[in-house]
Image (cartoon, rainbow over all chains, first blue to last red):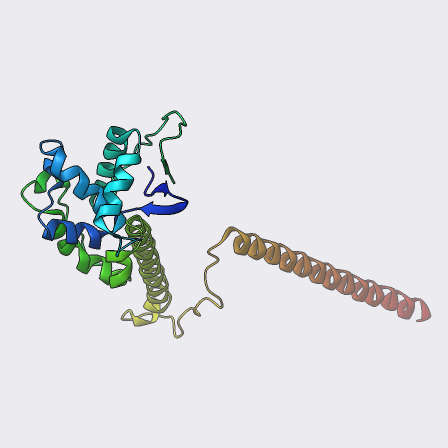
Length: 113
Length: 152
């Protein structure tokens, strides 16, 4: 399973990834992964913003919103982000990962690494 | 031995009440104990834990293997010395300790086998030479005896 997603926006490449520390900071700010699909309007942007924190700590929230607006396949992207977020925990227990993927290569504005 | 450190067997399914942060913090000491740094655990690639866990399994297997081997040497030493420790034993010296360690790898075993065969071959040649020498001496002695008798 991919651990990183790359987003290209206005000629700049952004790497989305979660570390345990970013997950900790997100939870401290009130984020709950289990409620993402219950309250997607508030939590999905938080999840997306949180994914920038590992490699782009000082990124502006407005820029993240703009990037989000330009992306296509956002439902799939949300699913990937949820998977990546959960990986921070799943890896601790050594469960076998099943390879996902098989998405058609399209110009979505983001790619898995 | 580095045993004794056990990871919590808790899984995400059994810890629904706990936040990810709590679970991370619970497991953090284990990963520190197996050599991960603070930064690797909290800020680095989340997959790293898998490799540290695997490395810890290898370390435990190795420690177990070494303990077993040490036990085997100890057992052998005890067996070799035990005859002289028995009351009324006629043995006055223990059997010598093996002159070299056990061959553990396939390569070492093959080398030992080869050395053993070479030593046996040399020994049989020496034995054969001695036999020939003895035979010649006997022959010369018998020929010499005949000559002396004929001279008489």
